Length: 372
Ligand SMILES: Cc1ncc(COP(=O)(O)O)c(C=O)c1O
Image 1 (spheres, rainbow, N blue to C red):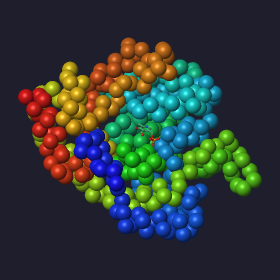
Image 2: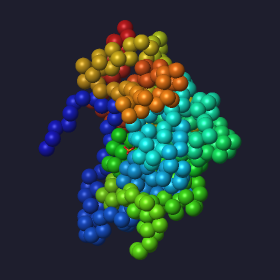
Image 3: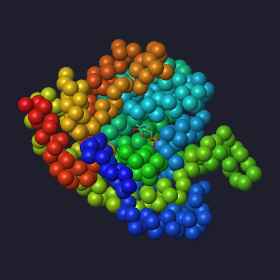
């Protein structure tokens, strides 16, 4: 058996109880129904619908395929412009290009690191068809401001909510805003199905369209109505999801405890800023980002040398990646705050089991030693 690595990573996945998982695998193999909207898949879809309190949800085999499909479902004019953030994972920008659309980067704000309405508006042209915004770290975008812009300029709004599982604003699911919200259930995410994702939409017709697109465009056995993809989640993924949903509360409780300890111990360090979210928003507890003035890279190397693998999410910016760096909107002048934030941010280890084996203490002590 492979030995567990002693390195402290930025995250560790929730692992379902093995006896229950083995039992579910037996059920799946006995049924001989391994994928294509099987029993476990449908049950997970129902359970998530109630858990997240949403009307329309469709599971996917990963978040990237889900986001690809979300853009496709919006029927945006080929070659039109989609305004997006550079401060995100590569997949957000890639899905725009894969849909034959043009990414246009706008800048973010300093406190929550999400797109600002002012910067979005500045980048709107007659060719703009949509906004693809990211609730980065689960910090909500200005959903009301973006809705206002979308109405004014007749734009579609898609949210990449890969980090925003169960984020709520005033008790309402964050997915109530925008045309479609994507969730990722990748192993690094708070809630995982190993690989996986979902689309939540606020319109029944869009929901039905996504359902067809997810399955090659098949409307029924003999009718292909659209150019679809294989986005289906399989039964083993769904089984992991069903079991992880049962232990999610414990994982969140663990992260809340760690969050408080980090704040108690690190907020007095002058060089560190810990971002806060508004009181009316629930934290998704996906990441624990801090901003470090000047010495971010030294801190990263120091932690790594001492067995702690924190991550510079999101450095470099997507606008700095080779396929996008020549775009006009990729200039530093257009993205001053995003550029600054990407040079300061570092995500600390954040997962329920971090309290075991003195790991959390080790991380905190190392950071304190570094700044002493
Ligand atoms: C912001 C963001 N968008 C999209 C994705 C892609 O999701 P997936 O890995 O499930 O394909 C990720 C990460 O995994 C992400 O962090």
